[in-house]
Length: 261
Figure 1 (cartoon, one colour):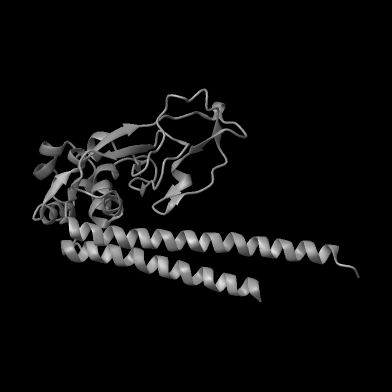
Figure 2: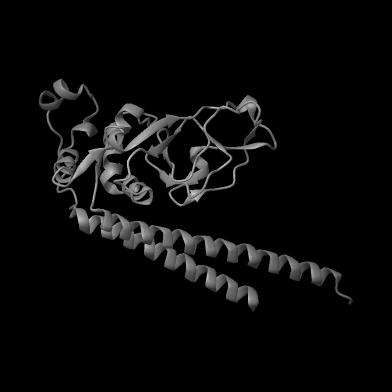
């Protein structure tokens, strides 16, 4: 019965966490007043290839042009004006260990956080490689491109070469707000445009730094950041409850095994 109540409370917290995250996304969308693309017709080769040099038809969809026109109606900056970008390394499977310094790949993180990894490397071999610092935004550039996660505290891990580290170089934008924008449709469409021409998606750092970021008034950024942080806090609470529930079940099983017939 107690386990059932724990699981019900866990589900309630996850639902509430999802609510606050969706609410923060809606605040962003309402502030930008971004509409849905009206069509996906493709511009002619002669219209655009001479300017961009891109051969993939996806790049020329007018939805991308409309998006940028809409974003540029608001105060905006390129990502490169807001952050410094640092690359990590590809450790190589020959350097994997059973224990040591956690090695985080794209598969090991999402916009919600970093999951436990089963890949480790020797700390001594990678002593000079950057570690994620508080408020660093991790952004995936290979494979599944455009996943962004704002690191809440310093982490003693290293990330794969498919993940770049973005550190703010201005106080005009809040880290949680920027992470939400990077995960939003406004930036995902830009990532799709840039990386969509590859068989294996690859988002070049030079393209990442040219992404257009809407810079909303600080008070709206703060509202969005507060809701994002509330969502993460509730998710953390649900994970703690889940662990407690697992321990409860394990204890019950163990007690049952040792019970006198």
